[in-house]
Amino acid sequence: MNPTNAEPHSFHINALALNVGTIYFLDSKNIQSQFEKISKTEQTRILNAGAGITVTNPPACVAPFRYWRGGGQISNIIALDKQFCNKFASEEIFCTILHEIGHIVNTVPITRYSDSKIEEYYADDYIRHCGFSTEWSTLLLRLHDEKAIGFDKPEIKERAMRFINNEPKLINEEALN
Ligand SMILES: [Zn+2]
Image (cartoon, rainbow, N blue to C red; front, top):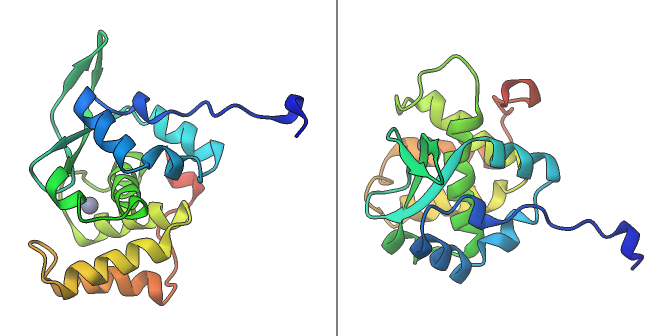
């Protein structure tokens, strides 16, 4: 390899992790290697989204509270349920993170944190935009079939079927931060 062409990986997961426990968890699940699969454009968009990730107990969500780090304020906290995520493959945890980032980077005129069906579609479509369609639909169907808490609903299956049936994405480049 010509070293002049070797682009360094400017993205590092530690830029998103809010504490040592989260760095340890994300490292143990090889999430850095997942982020390296997506384009520089998406890596940059995610870094600029002002998000932070922490492992905690509620199901994955973007929490509407603020967190101070290094003198700066982060308002988009991605909280991952560690126990729940321990049952997921690396790609599945990454999809979960991308879904939550999808809630943050979508700029369509919908109310964030409203939990509406359409809002979930937009967040899901960010995963498709990043190229992880199969991994996410497979995970949603599995959680639905296993009747995991919060996933035992027809809407979950509908979300997976949107991917499987290759229904048009709601998001486009212009609708992303
Ligand atoms: Zn969501």
